[in-house]
Amino acid sequence: MSAMMMEHPDYLFESSWEVCNKVGGIYTVLSTKAYTLQQTFQDNVIFIGPDIWKDKKSPDFKETDLFADWKQYAEKENLRVKVGRWNVPGEPPVILVDYAPFFTEKNTLFFSMWNDFKVDSIHAYGDYDESCIFAYAVGKVIESFYRFYHLEEKKVVALFNEWMLGMGLLYLQKKVPAIATLFTTHATSIGRSIAGNNKALYAYMDGYHGDQMAQELNMEAKHSVEKQAAHHADCFTTVSDITALECRHLLDKQPDIVTPNGFEPNFVPTAERYERKRAAAREILLNVAGKLLGYPIAKDAFIILTSGRYEYRNKGIDVFIEAMDRVRLSCELQRESVAFIMVPAWVKETRSDLQYAIANNYHTTLPMQCPFITHWLNEMGNDRILNYIFQCGFANSQSDKLKIIFVPCYLNGEDGIFNCSYYDLLIGADVTVYPSYYEPWGYTPLESIAFGIPTVTTNLAGFGLWAKKYLSGDNLEEGVAVANRTDFNYFEVADFIKNQLINYAKNSASSNQIVRDKCFSLAKQAEWNKFISYYNEAFSIALSNAAKRNGNKSY
Image (cartoon, rainbow, N blue to C red; front, top):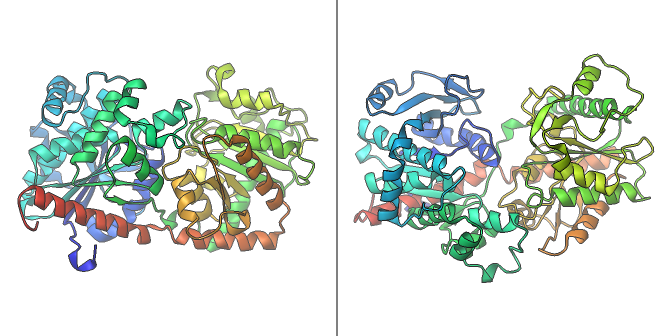
């Protein structure tokens, strides 16, 4: 779409379950994109999220008197909202809505969604009801704001993220058809389910029918609302070419445009602070490892890191552990190495023995009980990560060249062991590994190179495919190594990772600096100031299609 034809919204509403609510990667998408959007829209970009905090204080929401006149009006409409700013770069306006009062309207809502859009909620379970009621509340908030401020003469766009917000889009399209709607699926619900149920997603993609698979996997309700939102949106987007293929086959809808996820560089320490932050991170990581294992770890130890959601197969956690085992058993590894698995799990409590040793700088001379984990878990005997570590025969003894440590907590600065954020630890790694099987985009490897840390990812991650547009992906010396992963080559991927790590561990400090510079250079290509152009085109597509839907030649 040429610049001459581009239409730009006057107001943008963006809603997600992860606005001011850090659950997964979408939080990073929105919180980093906010700065660039705020530069364009000023206070006319408004994020809407769930008020899950009630009387508690949200760590990244600052309540203000913004839109105070509308808020007073909204309360008369039974809309209980908090209005303020998101405490991230850009500090955009945020509305948090308490959706609980609308549960009484659930049956009426679900009937109307079936009647108007053929959304099938009959087989709903789990988080479906809560998500859809929240989406409905979001639709009502936008409708109320639109009417109160008389935005009829303005170009207004509303962007809804993931199936959880689908009913908000459908509600708005019926009640306020003048508003242009966008729907972004970051990962299709049925595609994630196919992959998570150990079915071969990619080899048989052409043979899968979304509706049939939804019935087989008991995903009918989520799939239904997602599919209808995709088909009815004025602009349907997804985050990578690999997910666009998935949408075409499983949702029977080709996205109008791919809007890849960018990153905001102001999350990364400046050059003056970088080495100091890196040294501090390494000291923390190696100190925790040493206290847990009962012996000091070399200051120049090779630190390997993986992180993300606890999706054991989808995120390639199983392959990561397998690869670490192969590195450990290899006679080629000469450098002491520590692999950290930073994946939040069902934490029971902080380890008091480890906490005491760190707080008192106690020099342990024997390994602690279960020297593979920093926090105790509920039902530890059923944890898949720990079980595979044990199955592989890891001992974490001083004679082992590679040690493996599971960090199962959210790294928000209050975990009791590290007490700093994920980014404050990531910068201390030498290399990261994300061997995902199912990864629509892949923020973790992008974050890694943004912090100057080379990474191994796969061609089944949207980021991996994107990176291969700029490099071969054959070698970590380029900053990103991309494993060719299929449905059936698990062990070949583990070997690829092993070889990449062993070779990279031999590098000199000067060679590592060259690789780090390559990481920074590639990351600059994925900054929001470049990727926001895809969103601008998506907004224009939505406005154009909304005008056609409403019988107008132009908006």
